[in-house]
Image (cartoon, rainbow, N blue to C red):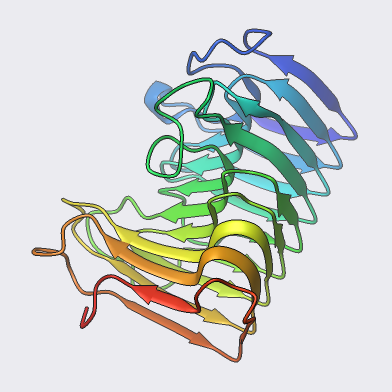
Length: 263
């Protein structure tokens, strides 16, 4: 099926008030576990008061073009909300969007926090190559933009592009990259927030991050502009990250923290 939605408001999906259950999606396009493939062209829509995700594009073959939309979470809540999720083989291009206020509050639910469950503005979880977020404002989320590849082998070329975005006051990571290839170019990353670009690899992942950043601005981070980490320092897999022609302000607590020297 194909959905064309312009200037549509979705106000409410799932329980209200939020109860922490993992359901309640404003607009769902495709569903991998149900074998459903969906397509959507979404323009200048507004989604709010969702329990889990504002928009989900899910499953191999599912696609979406999302332009000028506004997706607003509940702010500090007992839920790891995601503004827009692109997952399990789906492809989506997001541009000129405003995505904000997805925060999982540790004071309400103990599993939330910088080392626990986090809410995300834009989540690329096993997204298909060609997915992107560009010229968008992503602010006041736990994580601004998150990417991890889910393929069994490292992709040959970047799957996700994060380009010309304003990433503002995302309280933990403005951009978090795990295994896979991605580009982060011409973005303005502004704190306060913990880290500007956070690179990590969890135990058991078959490959690491292979990413690049160019002509970005990073300032106001309370931990580091760029932070490199692995959950298993003894067996982690070497990755690569090239950052060039970027402005890293001295207003960051540190420029680069690398907990994996030599790797």
